[in-house]
Length: 504
Image (cartoon, rainbow, N blue to C red; front, top):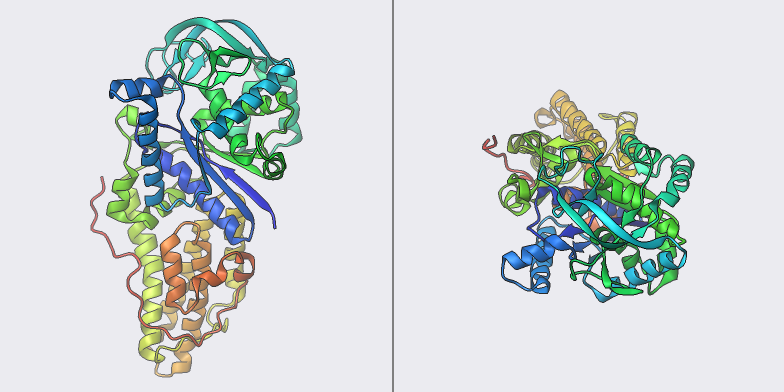
C-alpha cells in the first residue's frame, strides 16, 4: 500500500465559496478517490485561512467579532463541499491550537538556523491578496490580480532570507523536473527563481489578528507564511513527526496559478530553511474565466456552486469541470457548455447506453444478463482506451481520462446500432453485443467513479454488480473481459434526464 497525501489551498473566509474554489476541490477530490480506488492510503486535506487583514476587515464591516466571522464562514465552506460530495479526510482552520503550535515550532526552527532577521519594510501591498508587490510585479501601481491600487506600507518587520535559497531551489528544480505539473507552470516558477530572489517580510505589527512570533510577540506572522505551514501542521509536524515524515514523502499540493510564487518558490525555500524536504509534487491548475476574466466574488462574476448543483445535479457539475478544462490551462465557464456536456456526453452517451442495454436485456433475454464474449467488441478494441484512461488518472489528466471513457461509450453505441440486438429473432444473436456492451458499462462505471460518484454506483447496481466490490481494487477491476453475466436486470431509470437548453 502506498501513501497519497493531497491538499488544496486553504480558502480565505472573507466571502462565500464560489465555483473557482469548487474547481480546486473537485480536482483534488477526484484524485483522492482514484487513489483510494487503487487501494492507496489517502490523506486528503483542505481547510480555511482565517488570519490576516482582509479577514479582520470583513468581520468589522459586518459588525462581528473576527472569531465569530471565521466560525460562520468555515461552516459555509464545509456545507459547499458537502453539496459537491467532497470526501476530505481533514479540514484545518488556521485559528486552531494545533496550527499555532506548528507555526511557532516551524518559525523557531528557521529563526534558530539564522534565516530570519529584523528590518524595516517599505513598499506596496494588496489587502485582497494579502501580498506584497514590487515595482516589477506591479509597474502601474495596481494589483496585477485585483486591478486595484496598491497601498503604501512602512513598518518594522522580520524578514525571511529567501535570497539565500536561490541556488538550492534551482538545484531542486534541476534534480526533480517533475516537481511542478504541468511543465509550463514549472517554467514560470523556475524563471522567477532564475531572475533573482529578494528577502520577504514575514511579520506585521499593524494588526494583531494572527499568530505571534515565538521570540517576539509584538509581531504576528504574515498571513501567507502562516497559511503555507498548514500542510505540515495537519500531517503531524508538531505532534507526530513519524506520521509527518511518512506522509510528507508523498505530498501533492493542488493550487491555482495565481499562488505559484508562494507555493513553488517561497514554500520549498521555507521547508529547506527549517531543515525539511520540499513537497514531492505541486499540481497547478489554471483559472476559471467568465468572459475572459478570472472568476472571483470581488469581481462580481463569481458563480455559486450550490445553485449549479440545485439545477444540474452534483455529478453533472463535477463532470463538466473536470471534462471541460485540462489541468493547468485557463478555461471559460458557461452554462451553455455545461448543458452541452450534460446532454451529449452524460444523457445521450452514457445514460442512453445504460438505458438501451438494460431495456433490451429485460425485454428480449428475460432480464438475465449475458456474459462478455468479445465477439461483438473484441478486447483489443477496448484495452487501449482503458489503458489511456488509467494513464490520464495517474498523470492528473482528468480531461484525457474522461475522453477515453467517452470513446468507449461511442464504440459500444456504434456496435449496438450496427448489430441492432433489439431486432434479433435469436436470443443468442442478441446476447453477444449486449454482453459486450455490459462489459463496457462495467469498465466505464469504474473509470468515472472519481467524478460521477452517484451515477457510477447506479450503473454498477443496474448491471448486477455491488459497487462496494470494486472499492480499493480498480487495477484488478479494469482488466477487460470480466463481466460474467447471469445477473437479473431490469430497465434502468434514466441516469441523466435530458435538459432543455437554458444556458447563455
